[in-house]
Length: 88
Image 1 (spheres, rainbow, N blue to C red):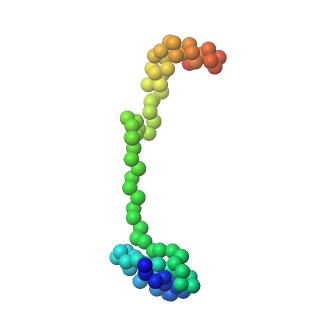
Image 2 (cartoon, rainbow, N blue to C red):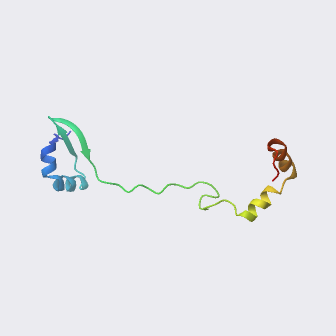
């Protein structure tokens, strides 16, 4: 393990330490000889994985499609109406 650099020295040599970290060297900053933090290069996060058929859609259904889906099954419409007291 690398000997920690004091916080004071790290402040005065920050640019140099950043370049060392970007080059892959271990840069440990500490206080009173004890390690506190480690400088590491920034890595751009990967784009989130979108799963599912509608992953790239901003909305799943348009109003027309919604009306078609809602009115497509009379049994479901009746169950909804009976349970909520509202009709679709």
